[in-house]
Length: 346
Ligand SMILES: [Fe+2]
Ligand SMILES: [Fe+2]
Image (cartoon, rainbow, N blue to C red; front, side, top):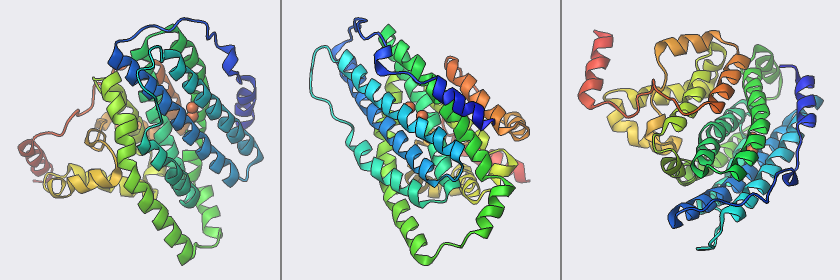
């Protein structure tokens, strides 16, 4: 990636909340839909602030002046998105059926996510951030915008999406960087972490895991079930994350190996039955997105593609309609799984 060019885009594509035409009248919703839409925009404001806090940590951790400036612009973008989301919440709150506060699971999770990103190895932290951004951009915002289906939301989401495209491109670039030999050498030269650092990391990770499941459930999975009942975009977002892990340079990373072990155990016909619930709890994810969401050909293709090309493909998916088709949308019956597991080994 040409970071200088990216920085140029970060500067030239800045915009302000008042560039949007807020005079457009808000469409009306049924009572329950209005309550849901206002709550989701309220939560979106909190998620955007979380994204901003995570980029701030990345900015502080980066040694590259260009990256520092790029991340600083992303912090600014996310704060602006948060303000826009709050204003959208107010815009659609026509009947004031109740008062709205950010979801408590989000409030609890936010400082813990920031802490884990601060403490964890940068490569791991970056993978979490990339996952969050793909989930937010490909699944939640796009589905929410379609559900709202109104010019005010469309004009805001168009500009937010343009910013998010830059974020995802840089997220992928950083994933490739942390998986590179150059970074591995740099890391090897640095002092190993001492016991206190490891204890701090472990503590932060435990707190993070304890609050991750309710956060993902309340802020992503439940709203998505309402605004995209087909689940297509949710599966598409996780498929993009899984495909990134098919690149050999990324797959060899200890954290990627750990995630694929979890997936293998979860899909194993016998171990999956015993350990499945614990794996779901530990990863904090919906069972639908833990299993393999791509086929062999897609895996081989992703392994051959550059990280930039994978990012471009994820961004192209973002601007298309929901069309997920190749996923196993639910776990196959036990008998079928045992049969295929045996067939592969006999
Ligand atoms: Fe954002
Ligand atoms: Fe973002």
